[in-house]
Amino acid sequence: MRKQLQRLLQERIELYTSDNQERSERKSHLKKDLMRNRAAEIVRVNAAGKVHSRKKEDSDTILTYQVHLQYLLKQDDSFYIEEEMEEREARFRDGYLVDERELLPSFESEEEPLKCDTGAERLAYKYERMKAVQYAERWWNEFNPVYYKFTDDCTNYISQCLHAGGIPMWGAPNKSKGWWIRGKSWSYTWTTAHSLYYLLKAGTSIRTKQVESARELNLGDIICIDFEGDGRFDHNLIVTAKDQDGMPLVNAHTMNSRHRYWSYEDSTRYTPNIVYKFFMILDGG
Image (cartoon, rainbow, N blue to C red; front, side, top):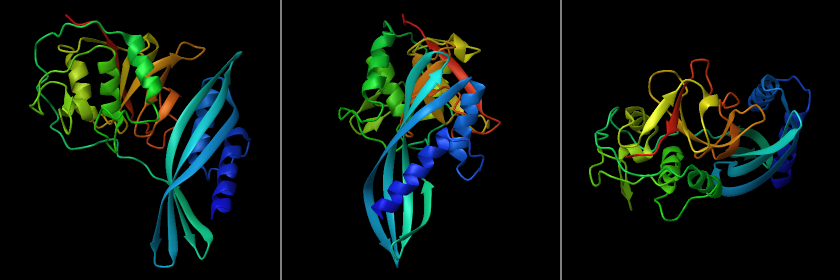
């Protein structure tokens, strides 16, 4: 089984750098299309897989495993590394691989009201954006044990980054008020994508400036994504670097990513209806 997975992984790696036009591996073609649109190229891909669960279903054996992908990208005369994690599942029957797929996350940890009480008070703080970025870099592919560990962790991770940048919590213990986490209790705004979007849009307690384009963002700023364009935001990103053209590269959790291009056009969740909101994080007071 291990050798079959290794062979499959090697075949997938080669798709990212080959000119093969078959569409059987949609994700690799989405990423190559995005690279062409950016006048960039994938020079090399490294991948490492780790099996973390195994179960039996009748005569089938199902392995769940994680793949760490590293892309060496070239844009003009500059090189940089993008990283991401995939959760995948492989099904074997009588020792032969019969099915293999990526496990797509939900991006949400719990149901929450569409609107929360964000409070009208202006908090006093200085946003140290490089501390937020340093935190995002340190924990992009790990869980800080100080915080409760969520399966769908995208907004919890972004909240941690903002807090590391100096933004104070407030509103506990009311789940529908403020922005906070204490042990196994937290506000909706801390853990769910749409509620954090609503908080940033309000721009009162956490002071923000909404801008029209990703290019206007600086390191430590936030992008909110509504994949379906249905008015409910699903995912949040933090800007941790810029590419050769001055466009944001982002870190995120749930589908753990580091220095990924901000538009997520290479995501299997991408749709033509996608909506982005861009927030500059300002000092409070």
